[in-house]
Amino acid sequence: MTGAVRPHPHFPAIYTATLEHASQRLATKNLAVGRTVYGERLVKSKGVEYRIWDPYRSKLAAAILKGLGTIPIKPNNKVLYLGAASGTTASHVSDMVGETGHIFCVEFASRSIRELVNNVCAFRANMSPILADARFPDRYSTIVGKVHNIYSDIAQPEQAKVLADNADMFLLKNGWIMLAIKAQSIDVTKEPTQIYKQEIKTLQNRGFDVKQTVHLEPYDKAHAMIVGTK
Image (tube, rainbow, N blue to C red; front, side, top):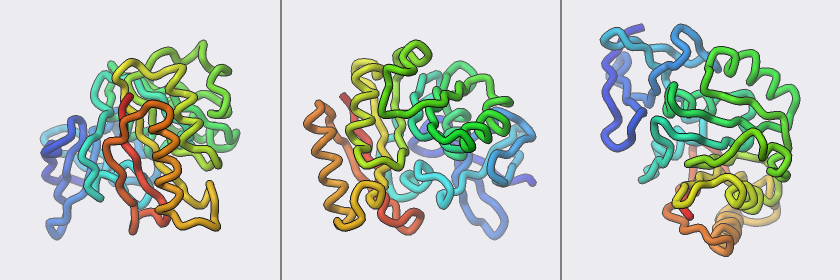
């Protein structure tokens, strides 16, 4: 389909698309022209193809719509993505960093990484799938190297610690982190806001300057996105 697409007013490599009935949606420029990843709509504008970005399927899109003030992932960046799953958000990050950037996708579940490889990475030269447990960054240290950003979306109890351990090994000086906190994966007996504060404290104790936290409801219940730098 065709539609009016404009650059996002604040974030590079992110766009807003105006669809039928004047509805506006987030979008990224499709690096794998003609292909979708999770059934998203494709929109063409002035000869360029864009992918509509669903905030109910992507916590990063949800965070943008909930008022996140900083998106550190930019064109040409190298990104370490922890918990890439089958590639929904990772594919949009791939669009954002472009052909001269790179995204290292760590995923522990064999089924998810099989889908990531076959449906996403096979058509995107800027993505490297890594079958590994994010709790042990030394196991993929020979593959990744230094990165500008770490994006973490893992369903494990010590989410901030896992991110910080990876940052110690891979994050460039003055690099940025994005942590999608899944409160119920940490402790179902505590209020989500209590969990967020706990994880923020862990990051601060590891030397991070937490810039912003946004709650992701109604797109994701008991989830928050944290952005920080070190």
